[in-house]
Image 1 (cartoon, rainbow, N blue to C red):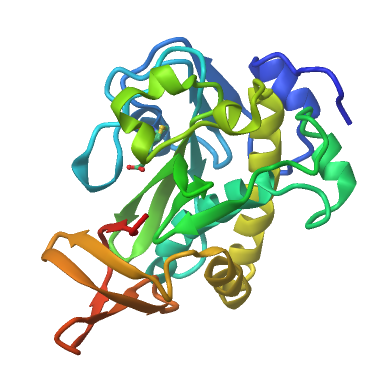
Image 2 (image 1 turned 180 degrees about the vertical axis):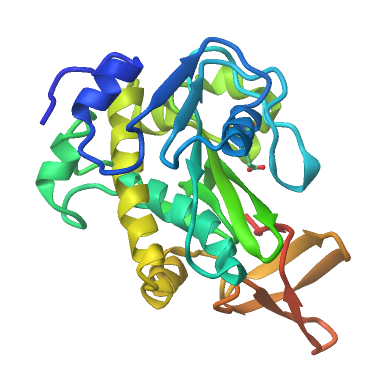
Length: 283
Ligand code: BTN
């Protein structure tokens, strides 16, 4: 347990980490193009799974649907994890769910998980005023605004996995001013909590939860992970606008399916399954 900040260095993070796979090797770069790109290069070189690539700043950070991901130097958790899954490539979508749930679990206050793991964070022990929810498919929201984005990328060799990279960016210590025009839809943990967060301790919690979920997936427990994702989602039941590669759709979000699809009832009454897209929620 830690009640003082852990320095944001590979050694200090590793000392606090009790994982079997994730973070056995950690690289922290001052400035990179994209941590996901470095992790993919490592995957192609044959590096073992669990490698964690961190950066203080990305010059070419990538987001979902071909967008860029920008974060000021030194205030966020910009992280990519190299994995070598053994479960069916048909379940690749579950890696993205795994990251969203790991961050969702890590942000939860005591009462929902054991007190020990919350004290281990170095963040103020709860109850925190944070209520994290997941917006389909994998944006983590606090008080309705995005604190974390996830970009999972998989490479295959024929029908088998070559490797996967799970990348996430958590807005840890960003002032409302630094969020600028994004403030309507995005926030940071420090802005929500009213104090800075210990990035290293937060990362330790996220990696610990991510490993636990990853091991469940490797053990074939996708059903359990699906149910936890469904319970954490705020999208079903809401009226939504979805910008999908096939165009904009407006309707009622009915449910999500085990392959990750969001099922909408359009105003015409037609039901549509959406596999990728951006959801906008009213209010
Ligand atoms: C999104 O919400 O669009 C996903 C954003 C993912 C950003 C992270 S930051 C670390 C990793 N490296 C990248 O280039 N992207 C991901």
